[in-house]
Amino acid sequence: METGKRVLAFGTHPDDIEIGCGGTEALLAAKGYEITHVILTSGEAGSDKTPPWELGPIREKEAIEAAKVIGAGNVEFLRYPDGLTGFTREMKVDIIRIVRRLKPHTLFIHERNESSLGHQVASELVLEAVQAGSGPWFQEAGGGPWSPEIILGYEVWHPLGDCGLAVDISATLETKIKALACHRSQTAAVRYDEAVRGFARWRGVMSLSGGDAEVFEVIKASQNLLFGSFR
Ligand SMILES: [Zn+2]
Image (tube, rainbow, N blue to C red; front, side, top):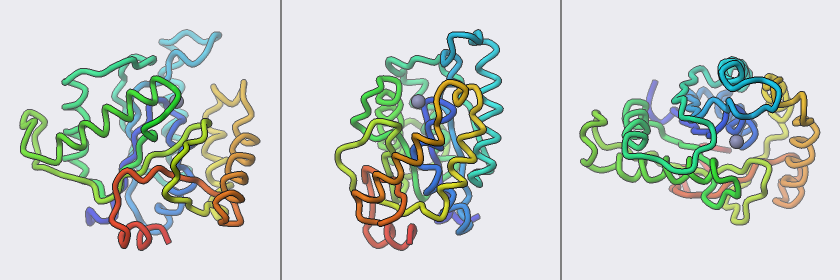
């Protein structure tokens, strides 16, 4: 697989990636992109009924199932404790190692001004690691320097302020909703399908795509590549 067709998405919890960029990923998967999801915590604290040691494995299975629906063939779990409040150098090395191994063309991560602390920490961790991994530093992570061409920040339920890119996901909205339905441990309490439909429609109308949309903070992009890749 040529590196120009590789996508790497990081999420704090097992459902974040589908919520934030599932529709866009499904479009990219249909174009032949190879997509990997890396999930930082297994979301084991996400229930007041199921104990964490049971919920973690359940949510990992749901994440694998959901990724398959989207067309993301590879899911990796870092199993950091749920409820991230900071990160260590070792965690940074983990991320650098993954980025250097997979050499993604496009990288998705939580947008930088996230209101959830766990999401915010993940965003900072991944972006710092990407920066560090683009140079000769951190040799303990192995591999050579690598820098993705495109880095996009996605939103999870809370609207981001600075959207540099809107992607019309009308063609893949149903796929996104099907993927989210795999997260049964979460949808039992919250109607993700209704929330996603409303959110995508609102984004579509306000970004003038006319249909349903996902929007992104453009953290890094070459204009030509950006439009060439997503059209
Ligand atoms: Zn989350």
